[in-house]
Length: 200
Image (cartoon, rainbow, N blue to C red; front, top):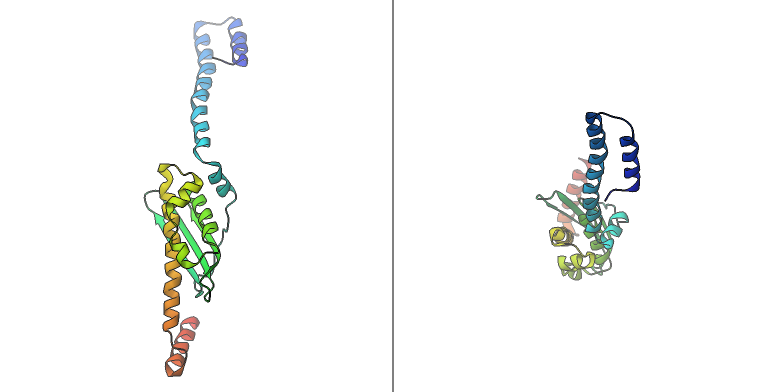
């Protein structure tokens, strides 16, 4: 039950003449730390096995970390969070206006390892997709790829919501851009308003 070093150490202590009090104190000082160490070793090992290797890989080597200028017309930004656990994700997509294909993706996430891994994998998924294809991504796809346990499924749901939010933001910008006049007095007036807003 006890290691050889502990038995040797105990033998040295008890080989010396001592009173009952000193023996009781010495034995306690030796045995309690050893028992506490044995008690805490097992939960730590369980915690290390909690995350799947794919989650650890994305956590230690996250893909597409960064940010883009959210004011650009071809950049869509999705910002979502889960108040219950405190995870916050920001996912941005850069879209080719002519083809509708997502050219680039960036993310920043504040949260646990599963939240970061879900965001990282989501960026790999959507890059190169069309907007319609990106909207079809389900959290189950992310959860299955990362082997997320039931308690961490909300992280994959956040990633799905972030993708949808970014696509919808881009579509809203695109729709507003198409409504803006390009010719005539109205176009001149709109251009003047934009310059005034930029100057302020």
